[in-house]
Image (cartoon, rainbow over all chains, first blue to last red; front, side, top):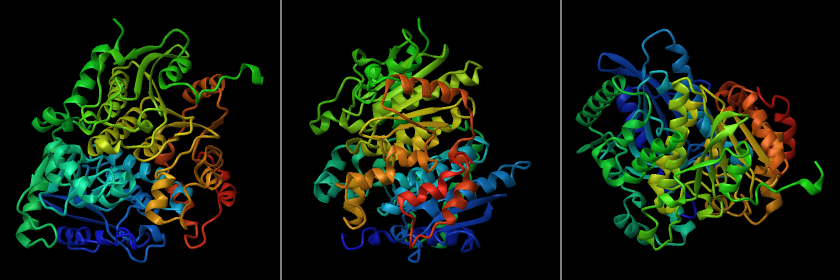
Length: 279
Length: 278
């Protein structure tokens, strides 16, 4: 891994699922090749699909393996806000974020040029779209890592995930976390088995109550036509569900799973509410 | 201000910082240490959990207006965001939002001193940070959200996005603001990319003065309690469009950069100096 960090993460799942769901390549004339955007039918309506995919020719070298870099994050912000502007006077289109992002881009140029603001702008756009009534659905089809996930997907009304070993969620890639914490990858995996929020696999992530639907029996790497249709159905159901529900993220705390493993998150809010106004 | 009367802000604890900035005599802590709301995850990893999980939430007033301050303790676990500390910040912002929606504005103040997600609570820290982002964005439509980055820990990881989402960001010279910490960049990209021990280089990239000079922070202040207290009150009076909404302007600035031959930090100050707030 050390020779080319991130190279192993070039799964291509983002591109494959994007093309399978939209029938298009989704390249924008003025946008980076790494951000794919297209409208496609979803049930009786149209939805806008957005994916971040690897671009080996990325002008920023640290963002060539599927990372969310400066251009990617600003493009996400621009594309999401474009949908909001287009739908100001009409029914709000659903936004489907296809998530296979290995990490944010780590580099000197990135910090100099404010990648933290770029990431914030993308998160801001997704959250603003959600608050404006666009159902925002994240579909995890590969890696959903750290700052990249915060930028692309984590502001969704509903998070769906394929129940597949390729789907991983974490605050830091396994290899990086092993280096930073000076533990072996095996030791990290052992820790994840004991401590659920430390785990990388999507089933553990779902146990935290953060996943609206875990979609079983679908081939994440090479989806068959039946897989694509099943996923389309799940996306439509999530859009319908989101349209009839609150526009905030409160659903993440109300599931049976959250009541188990996010007990502290719920308890903190309960007591804060009690103490908020002076007695 | 004479040197005699200066009092360092960054040397204060999180609790003292919140108390120092709220109007005198109005500090009222919520979920204080006696509540014993600790991290449920650290003891499982043989790490002693602190009784407030490193975040102090306090009600009070700012310029006699109802306010809430959330202050992160940089001395505890590097100011990292775990399940409880993150829920305290997100929950406080969500209640401020509830009050704003009921026509009772609350001024939210974030005192940031954090390396980002606490790796021992990984996915629950990340989830809490997403909820903090969501709350800032929703709340900002009602009232400015003001952030302060003052001390040597700085503000990194997912919380650097929270800083960038603030309506108004106050920073000191010794503070740093960046998405990725220097050690992580060196580890991931190699020492040729960034030498994490080269403080001069790092501050030139992400130090408070550079962030202010390139329009990525709104106020550069001395590490002084009185100066920061004034800057915070000014921030709530000067409502501007948040930087993270200025997509076209910042997109243009980035497009004009040559990625193969990027500007030096000093050159960037010239390039991005003019429109501090587009």
